[in-house]
Image (cartoon, rainbow, N blue to C red):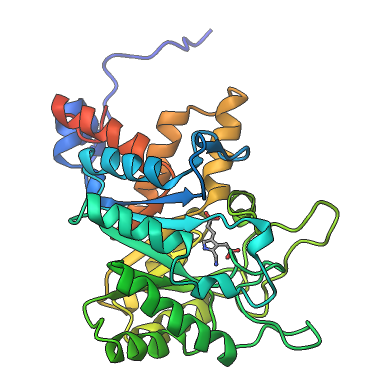
Length: 352
Ligand code: PBG
């Protein structure tokens, strides 16, 4: 019978042995190519009216809607952890919504008060807001509808977005982030901001934003989901077809040409190829949005004991940065920033 045990004398004659660089944690950290840091993150935060306790979002464990005072507290905690930026999203009371999203232009709107409060407490923190009508419209679309309700109007929507951007800029936001995917909105918003004397307000364009099923939990969080039983909101006349790579690159190039300061790919994890593609066609900074559904699926699997939460979330973010994102919008910002801080005090980088 031939022996199956390994012979200690057998040696392969190899030109190289890549495993030499993986032998221990110290070697691994020396050759580590991508490093996450708290400063890579933009934390999306939800804000509600009133003075109530934080309202947990069912499909996003660990995420809650904050009243303005608690929002400021949360921003302070993020700032202390080294997270430099937040993106604020309002949940508007259903009674205030109408088909035209009129509340979006209210000078004393919830989001305006939230921005002012955060900037007052933390003037150095970067504050961003979405420029789109979906939190405000009763139908949940990002734009105005035609009279017969069958079409999401482009130019009429952009006209509202220009005013909304100026309102947010005057409240103190550092970046406005048009997230609606209407044509021509970046150039229109840029010229409206400049005309209003807000030339320092930057634009982060949701430039390659796909019509994705991964936005489901977010729509619950801001209350823009349709009532149970109604057909899911169909945004395919403005958001990108998930099948289309060339079109996604073309959209990024258009937004760069219109004057966007930062471009974005959204969602992130299922679209790493697009992040890489856009990275290669532009010298602009690139953001990627790890959306609510990406967050929810990691938590769901972790709850079932099927995935390790800490390791999976870190790997998901590392992959997005490795693909070419300079900054990542992620609901994991606080937890991962905390984890990275404790790593760095132990000097171990990403290689545990
Ligand atoms: C609104 C907007 C959406 C998200 C960010 N801004 C939802 C949508 O377009 O339907 C999704 C974010 C997430 O899922 O985390 N235009």
